[in-house]
Amino acid sequence: MNLRIRLRSLLRPVVRYLAFFYYNSYYQEGDGKLTLGHHIGQCNVLFNTASGDVTVGDYTIFGYNTMVLTGRHLFDGGKRASLKDVDLDKSELNKHLGWGGGPEEVPPRGFDINIGRTVVSSHPVPLLPEE
View 1 (cartoon, rainbow, N blue to C red):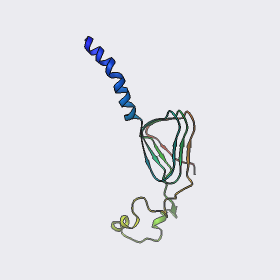
View 2: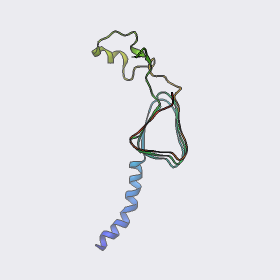
View 3: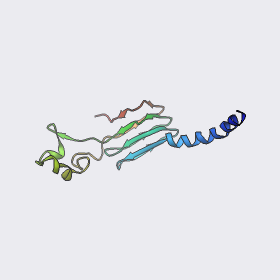
View 4: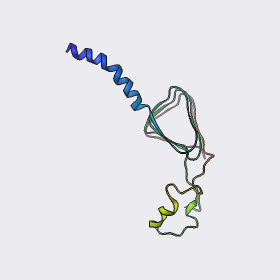
C-alpha cells in the first residue's frame, strides 16, 4: 500500500502534463487567420476559417468538440449557388463541384468571429458569425 501511494505521487505530475496536451487540442480548416489569446482551454475544437478570421480572447474555455464555423454556403432561390445553372445527375455532381461547392458558393471573407475575454462555451456547440 505504501508503494502505491509513493508511485501515485510520482506519476501524478507526469500524467497531468501529458493530459494537458491531450485535452488542449484544436484543428484549423481554411485559409483564414486564427488568433488565440493566453490561457485558452480547448478540447478538440474545430476552427473553420474558410469564410473569415477567428479571434479568441484570453482565459476562454471551450467544451469538448466545439465548432467555431465561419464557412457557409450561398443560396440563390432556395438552391445552392453553384448549382444554379448546372443540370447534372447526382453521380456527376461531385465531379463538377468538388468538396464544398467551390469558390462561387463559399465566400472567402466577411464572416469573422470574435470571441471575447473569459468566455465559456459548453459542449458540443457550434459558434457561428452573425448574419
